[in-house]
Length: 386
Image (cartoon, rainbow, N blue to C red; front, side, top):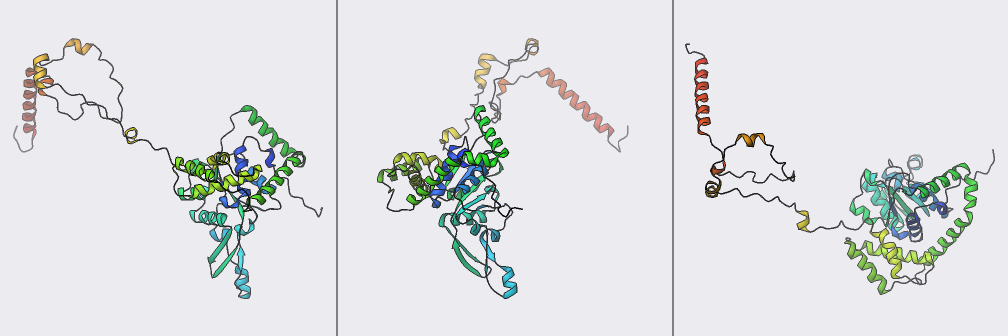
């Protein structure tokens, strides 16, 4: 067996097709860690996990840590090292997944299915860069700078709005509907599966260019003397957030940082309003309020009730109406389509006497039948002689 074990090649970020917004969001999060990570929403098979691994490969040597859904909060943040505590009566800290993801990528598939307590911790650490543990007699803190990438399928449930707001950027992915694009994506994946080394070598030059630009952009973004924010940029951010009706000011801060990261990536001498416009959809995708309809458009429109004719008008103009043989034989016109959520016109209102047909001979017959039925019932009652 060879002593050298080279890691298996990762699908290159430069080879991902049809998802330019996803690639841009991942690069911005890698440039500016304070963005708070990237949320990727979309159906299965849209390169979510492939892109996350590709970003970690660009940051190499950098770890790529996957957080399983069944992980406990101690497994994520770290806890007391029980082996040392039992053997030598020593209180020591056992690092968790957050410590292992330092300077790399922490990937959470189906983040919407994680317990809220774990998501809260992840977002706190991703934004601050420090993991603090106060548990099991341990008071410990360590640096934890990583790019948090979470994926979710909206059909399986949503995150609470408070958690969504703390995720920096959001990308909405859709299935590729262009036959040519789908063919190119499938061909690239098949080529990579058949010859990973050769496929990676074919994209080595592009990967190196992205890696160099990423390093330069991260250096410029961390330099406080470069890329200042002008008043025009601040005003553009404020207008975008007000138009989206976002709550609080976190969206403003994230948009400014994202615009600065984009300017650093593009090598611009300063942040411009165009940078703000380009990153605004990534920041507002999951924060924008639902369109508010007016009260008039939301309220159901009642069906107007038909006013019954008054007795005076009915008797004067129409008189008591009886059903004729012609009325019974001729089909009645089809009723107009009504709203099934509304009662029919005139429902619940008493009809005037003049509008009700009345036949005296029928009334006498019905009264006679009722008297005969009552007499027969009394005759059948027990204890009565026949």
